[in-house]
Image (tube, rainbow over all chains, first blue to last red; front, side):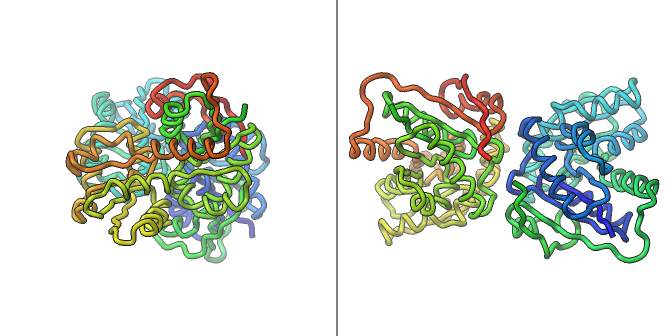
Length: 263
Length: 263
């Protein structure tokens, strides 16, 4: 039975795994977190492409039937190249998130937040405009959100103050929908709501990504339906650190994270 | 004319280069910042050792006469192994900082702050106790300080609040001296002083490191005295990002940062 391969720069992609387990409970999942080179958000396009290709080669050795790039930075920057290189179907997180946001907005003003790499790629903006050129997009990077999420500083006046600063331009633009363009940001939903107001729609692409994975496997006739799926977790460094953080993102413990060399 | 080789995980080590230029203006310096794999502070001992060895091999190709490990995490974790492997003299940042702190403290209570890797290695504590077992050491990691320094959030209520939380145990312990055990932290001196009080002695090891480098070259008779030294900068990723941040750490612009592959 072939697995779904998922990679991210670190732990954030586990929010996608969580949703895959929920929607596709019979599928086996192989996850790779590139914890030796995390984070990707500040790195160059060329380097992110190289890392992504290496990660996919590693997953292909685990006999996967498709790849899910559960990292916004890698999806924004590397997806077109990856799709050119590999035969296996590849799903990123950008297009699923955009579909949901375009559906959700009522005033046609969407905000996007993400890492510096994601925002400067303009991948979200381009995809939104492709679906609906009439939508205005306000996109800003929030570099301190990842360290705050990883450190578990999810509420209190400090993170609120940081969020207030970062989100000011989105508030000013009057967006009614915000794409959380980084797999770490769902952890900060409460503080983002506090700043943006209770009625703001926060789009976390994980659900939509899982739905897209389901559609592809279904179209290819390779969905599993028989037995409960298993998950395996690989990291390029620090399996203990990964396991320690995993619960916050996956909603369950990871006991069997295994260190492998991807370079 | 052989150069002094300096490496760090990213830009922080430039605070050491700044001091080397000041104290040894005739020396050529080759700097390598491992920006493709930055940061090191959250990574495992094994991985930090591997990265450090690769960085040194890269510097050795540039014909260096000694190596300065301008990264607290790499110095804490990898120095003994590195010294075993290589013939070239290697200076880290731990022992020079400790010497200065032990000299500076009057109440024999020293605080140490650094990355998680540095603090959990207990390298500072062990070195302090070796020089003076009567000194009490209070050591804590401050993981958010690096992102704050790199983002340039060096003052204001947010970073003050973060510093207040991190430094509370040092204040409680009544330390009169704090070792800034991370090359990013000197940028946060004003806010650390604000929390710890104006009379606190903040030890930034760069000066002492440069002095140690001078002593070694002097003892080996390989000091240069003739002409103004040159600096060359190599990074494993993102020369623009590096150059953009460099001025904050080096005190002058870096125009010629060159990308090289270290893996």
